[in-house]
Image (cartoon, rainbow, N blue to C red; front, side, top):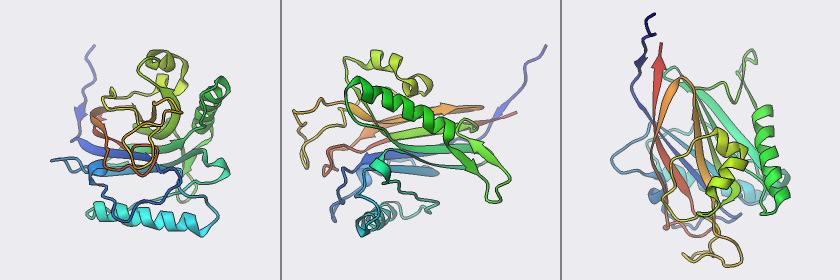
Length: 255
């Protein structure tokens, strides 16, 4: 019996950024380069997820939306905006997703904001929300003839404020008990906890346990995904969270 031969397509570089803005408007002089620009590598795809924009159903939400689009386009002038969605409704918890195909590779990106809290019920609720997102979210083609669930993609990226209060002491226990951390992969975190900071400061809020609530995870099927780097920036400090980003290299296996 001979092994099935496969060849690998050229690598695709993907950068993902995530930021919980704490329902605050970005400062007019903010510079996003330390968050979204990676030295010497120009990603073909950049996916950005924001959580906790100002409340919806008001002109405030529209103002915030336009501000962020303008800032992102100013930071990334050579990119074309494919789609944007803002989900500041019903308690601002849930997920918004997008899927598309690039070079015969199906990709899915999920921006999530799960329930807060450190008690057992809050932990269980986050696990329930994760399961509900994966069971209920469907993507339909423009003519409605085709549909895909989350798991029917070569590259799957899930990111956002997941609100799991991971610390240096509980990370192994948390991974064992958390559905999302058991089914997705993540590059080792080398940066300081991203929550909870005093506003416009590098000092943590002593009333909350500092933790890594903001995460970028991935899963692959019939492709290779290699995380290259994972970072945060202290240059963006107006929120109680720090923004995070991760750079990936993806190779599609063509049989």
